[in-house]
Image (cartoon, rainbow, N blue to C red; front, side, top):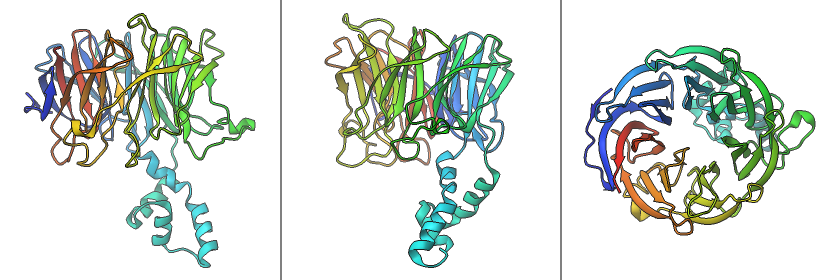
Amino acid sequence: MTVRMPATPLASANIRPLARLDLPGGGEVTIKDGYAFIGHMSPPDGTTILDIRDPSAPRIVARLAPPDPFSHTHKVKVAGDLMITNVERQRRHFYRKGERLEAAAAELAARLGHAPSEAELAAALGVAPADMPELRAGLARGYEAGGFRVWDIADPAEPRLLASVKTGGIGVHRFDMDERYAYISTEMEGYVGNILVIYDLADPTRPREVSRWHMPGQHVAAGETPSWPGQRHRLHHALRVGDIMWASCWYAGAFTIDVSDITRPRTLGSYNYHPPFPEPTHTLFRLAAPIAGRDIALMIDEEHDHTPGQPHAFLWVMDASDPAALQPISTFHVAESASPYARAGGRFGAHQFQERQVGSLVFASWFAGGLRVIDLANPEEPREAGHFIPAPAAGHKAPQSNDVDVDPRGIVALLDRDRGLDLLAFED
């Protein structure tokens, strides 16, 4: 790892760079008690723990590998002395195409009147012909490792594995946790797409499932039939605030779930804006304290498969006074002209914000738009209070700011999907 003062960013306002770390690309960063916990996108890199008590001189104190070469552990959360890391199939979207091999071959044979060639089959599946051997190998190999791992981090430099929990399908994506429960987004046998599975961590060496929640249509083993293709409607993750889970459900929009009885999660309401808005719902989070006397929830979409002529992914400011009936107050957008990398390659629009309240400020990662700091002091008119666009990592055309967290000192950790972590200070 190389630690250096970052080069002068291409664009910055009210942000002071403290240090840049040359780390493998990551999916999530979370900060606790002067340590940053980073989940990396791809094996052999798994989880890195950094001491950032001196943010100008961060240092690695621990590295944890994924459990096998076919899994990534790109998400991480901490609560108290516990850390959870996900285990999910690496290249899951690629290997999912292998599940259609037999059906695609039959469809082509019926249409062409002969057995399809490998090149014809590859084209039908949307992969390169050279990828077909690995696609077949992945289908034969299957995947049984999906789930999550629980760690004791009383000493962050010496993480100790307490439990490995297997779930189902491709495993666990993003999730939430507190010191008592884990709120896991995962595929499970008998369901289509990720659902919410809640585990009791009272004994962290033996996490115990206590309940499940799913959208109508997901539980195919119980006779339900989805009204959407594939995994288009699925839980991305759900965040607990009080006795309500605030759930982002991809192209199904947002759901609120009552967990006052943790054994019986109950849907309160939903808000879906697909169509006409094209990008999937990535995160929904209720702010604990009101802003300008209003109960606020934040909702952000993920720039996923942007269609020219359609809006880029953006931030929603929602009225959460009635959790069963969310209503939009305003939205915040970043124009392509705000970043010279908007059309350089890779994604441009929104992705994620810090999953904790920082007064009226929202720190949002915006892919090629870098970091955007948004002030909601007037929820009806969000204004940009700062921004930081890092230089692209070596060999890449644009930054891909993927995740962000802020510690109580105001230290901001901005994680790039491809490579690099910036430590920053916001100075309004």
